[in-house]
Length: 288
Image (cartoon, rainbow, N blue to C red; front, side, top):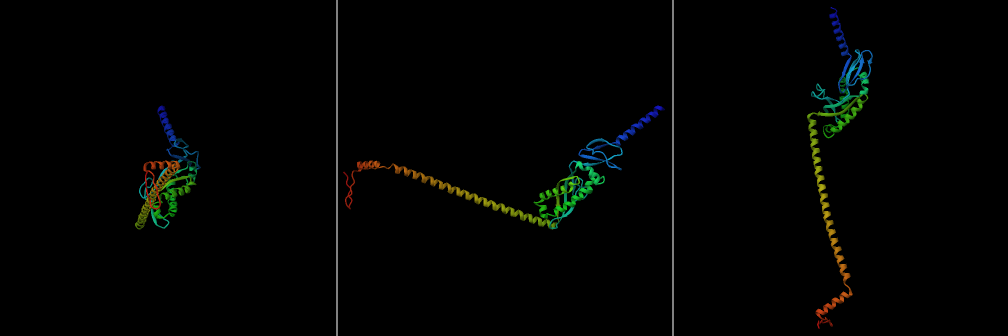
């Protein structure tokens, strides 16, 4: 009988110890940290990093992501966008747009305790849904209102995304929330506006094509002019070289004609042809 009672007590002790161990341990997943708190005294102890930890049974924990998390505000069920989370905004001309947007966020590890207090114990996901997303929408509207709808849908999309990322990052920084990679992934407008935008894009493309053709013609004309100039220069250089050579030859020939050479040539002519005499107005040529 005593053995049976002892066995029951042992089992009870083991069960109680297991329960205490279970409620006194917590696992923090990779990429998260946990804030410890009690219902009576607020934040307790240190921030817990990833892994297993022992804590007081009366202390609870709330998780916050400190790795990059992708979030969506789209009309489809993308990622954490469970319903139609797209939103409307107006361009600088007052044109209505329906916007799908994505962004990444993470909580600063050194500010999660303040974040816990500020948002009254809400978890990271609850803060995302109740605070981050509504303000992403509100502050995005402020930025896109500075741009024309044709620019947002066209060539300025990348610049708009950059401006959004910078603006939203500054807005959330003081809360210990880092926002990055904000991107407008889909924008829709009414049919009339879309037709006007398409016409403008077509006109711009035609103008760009004409500008390219004009520049090509200008470049070709410049190239042809350079070729003509080079050919003319080459011809002039050749003529100059020929003239210099002829002048040099003439100079050499002139310097070679001396009195002695003239007398020698005269003697050779007399030897071959005899004397040539001119008398009066009537020329008579005689030979010896």
